[in-house]
Image 1 (tube, rainbow, N blue to C red):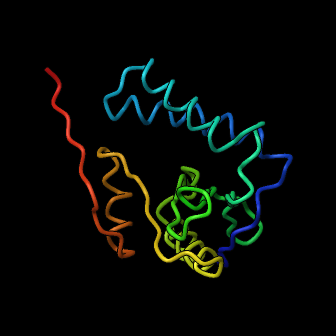
Image 2 (image 1 turned 120 degrees about the vertical axis):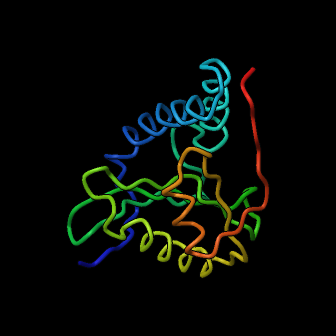
Amino acid sequence: MTVRLDPMAQSRLADWIETRHARYIESRMLAGESREVATQKAVDSRQENFPGDRPLDTHLVFDVRADDTVVGHLWRGPSPSGATEWWVFDIEIDEAHRRRGYARRALELGHAAVKHRGATAIGLNVFGYNAVAKDLYSALGYAVTATQMKKPL
């Protein structure tokens, strides 16, 4: 099966932004934030990265395709805009297509794409509860640069 990254079609982008916004709130809440804090951080992120509900010109939003089937998405961009250090803002493989190597291949293809655009490093955030993602990122050579910890009282 051939995996490739295709720029996300404009017809899908608005729905993707809405879905991503809701999932980001959920992820932040799973990581321990209140709904209010998670929502505000998601709103701030959306305003910063999707002004006018369009990605920044420097950002790349891809459909991850396995042959002709969209199996997920990948969003990358320089952080901050114009820097040579890039960021994986979001990657997700649809549940029905997970555990087949699509995320690994999408990340590898994404690494090559941003290196071609002058990136010298790539970073990402992974929430503590997402052990599967942490294992994948470690296997791809990502190293921990900071750890945030929290204890409920």
